[in-house]
Length: 325
Image (tube, rainbow, N blue to C red; front, side, top):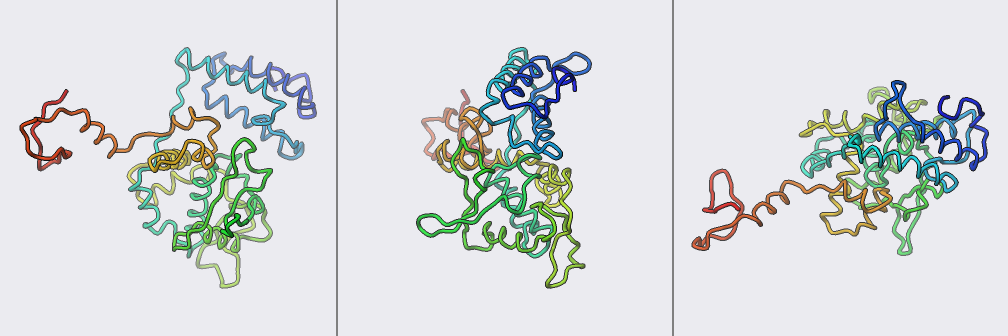
């Protein structure tokens, strides 16, 4: 490997030594053509290195993205990203939030039915992304059946949460509570786990065609769901549910951030769910919806003092006399 790794068995280095190598590597990071990588490419390279170190045959018990021994190398990487932004080469775009109408359509379209392997998996995957901010290979594809535990709070209410070593130590423990109705996420998750293949450790397994399932058989094969299937989950679901546009997995997180903000929850509470590390990154995901944009427009629009009509938004068939600013 180039840029600092070619002369060392970096997989075997101590965390302190590895951090030094990563500092040099990040500082010299360029494409084959000598050009700067984009922000998403840089973050992806770091994630790939982390995956290389933590997967067999090395199976290192560390995380170069979050662990304290790698603070300095991550500061170098952060500085590199800030440099891209200053020269106008940070072309990353925040994903658009799923609109409330499409969110409602998902639950009413049948794509979240708990009666078939595919749709039950759809519901569970969507709700784990929404409730725990899980996304990408590291946060979603690598989940295992034992990554979650069921607990009860001090009032005896049951919830599911990530195991301690899976949860981000920098935020409060995210929880998924039951609602007791037909769309209860806790009941769906319990049913999903009961239908998984006992021979496969992956949480997301390949569904068995409904016609091949017997009453006592598992609903999923002894094989993990493909990584591309996981990463393109929301895009495929957008088509099958006939949503207004094609969304990505990150759009679910943007929806949660925006929706909870509109409902008046604190930034600290929202970050517990979404996994954002600071308020700035959270607020960059929060976008005004169409109704709010309309009310903002109406609020700054001058209306005639002679009109006896109440100040209502204009429609296609009825308009109020006004003069725009």
